Length: 273
Image 1: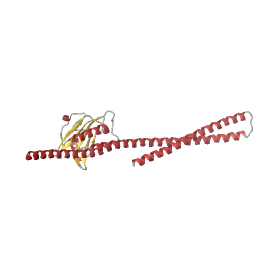
Image 2: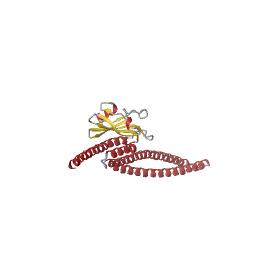
Image 3: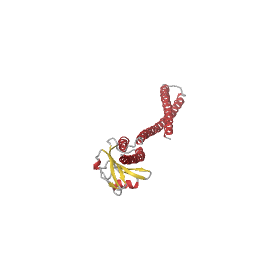
Image 4: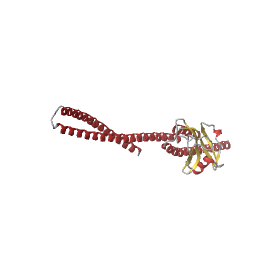
């Protein structure tokens, strides 16, 4: 669908460019004709002043009317060119927006591929951290997972802050607990006025598989060049939350099964010796 939009934008842009060129050429011709007629009027005025024929006055009026018509046509062409330029700018802006979206989605595809290319829990957390820094533009954040036995949400990886600084949060406590319970994202109303609070992050995104929340992504500070979120960022949050949750869940299951297999193997080895 986006490729069709790009082709349509490119085609319309080419059409508008051709119209603009033709309009510019026609305007130049009008200006030259206008200048020629003005010169002719001056000649007729001089001729009439020096005692020219009586018919010269009629010719002068015709030329004056012709100049007025050309002036009107020229103004109409200029108005059309201005309108075309405005539409062309709108299409150019839309094209850049689509290009940015495509780049971000391509990056997300690569990132999601990396997420699902390993079952090592630590590697998954490292990949998620890099994605949040590079795609989201976050400087300080924590990846927090839910311990279903204690109903506490604990930080398992952080960036820009010490893991020990992030307090554990119960499901019924504050913004983090609310996001983990409801499965709905939280965004501060004013990023500029936000002051870091580990229990109330600037942005809190649930990590969930379908409707089951396994943790949250808590962002406390954005990079200097990141002043606000673009519409595509919210799409990235949604897609990232699902992919990250799936990768984390899979890697934890794999790690648990590996530990159990290792334990069982250890008992087997003891029994067979």
